Image 1: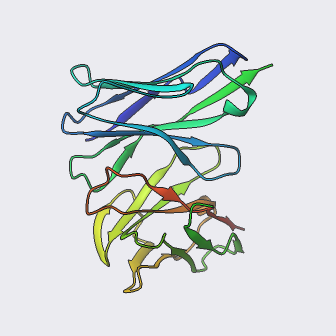
Image 2: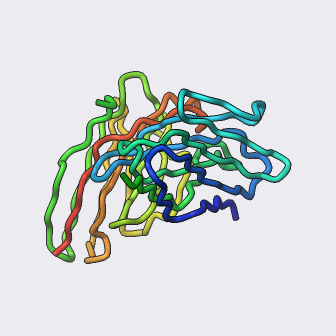
Length: 112
Length: 115
């Protein structure tokens, strides 16, 4: 069935360094790939998304890259700050396009 | 504030009981999604409604059911509750035109504790 694998499950980086989270999807028909950030005890919020007709998208310190051939996409956070500490979820649109298939999440820890 | 309202915020109930969780989507959003998030776990998709009709179903137990009303608010009914049903239940909404390739806005969630 459709699935999205997300790695790593936990990522600890020094403040100021870069963080990279990777996701692999199974359905070649997927065409929408959002990333959500969930701070402790709060709701998930969209931080960036990319569609299949684009290879890369940037928004300040955050960027997402998409490799359709390899069916994987990645979130890049540069110059990490304490407020970046959260759980990050990737997702891919399903074959039916009526739902998102979610990764299991990555807990990002920023060390001072 | 995402514009998605969920009530109640917290709910404590006993095993075997039935509860109803309510969700009001953002104004203009036609799609409503329900998710279950157990402690330190990911988001488990339960079910989606679009303009009153069920559109997609995930790993929703038979003891659970949902509906979307003409005013587009949605309710998730959980019955014969078990300890393992304790979780944070999120509702999300999107403009959706039937397709899930637009931003989904999440409510604050309902934390259900079954004792």
